[in-house]
Length: 168
Image (cartoon, rainbow, N blue to C red; front, side):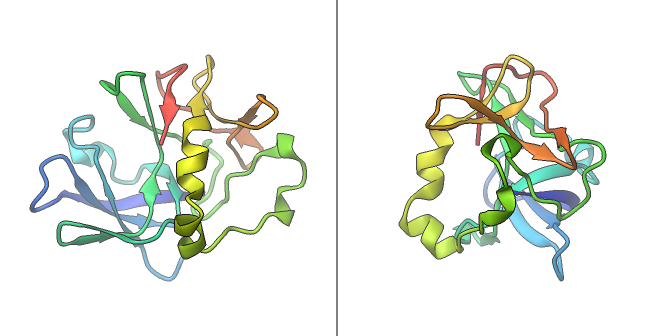
């Protein structure tokens, strides 16, 4: 999971609920990512220049005629009637990695390749334990049943208003 910045956004030409974004992640060029955010952010300009968290090691997926190369992480309330982009801390820089300091030294963990993530269904297995807590902070509930905050630049990530929700 890395910090990105949405550099451009437009509605998908074939899918009414999808935005097609170009997101800067500190790589050679911005990544193309599709997100189902039209219903929740009807004015796309509010997302331009916004920093977001991007799950970068997902297998590319075709959405209509648009190839999506990652996923913008968002929080939703239980009935999914409200969705908000997860905000990295103010000091976060494009390309910074999310860490989970309560798990110890995160530098020993290497990101898995997209094919391995897909084959082992890593995201599908982790996703049910990605939540927002009562402080509107995204967390991973580990096997120890403890909350492990998403941290970037020594500060916790957050969402504007959704507590006790899901992150995906």
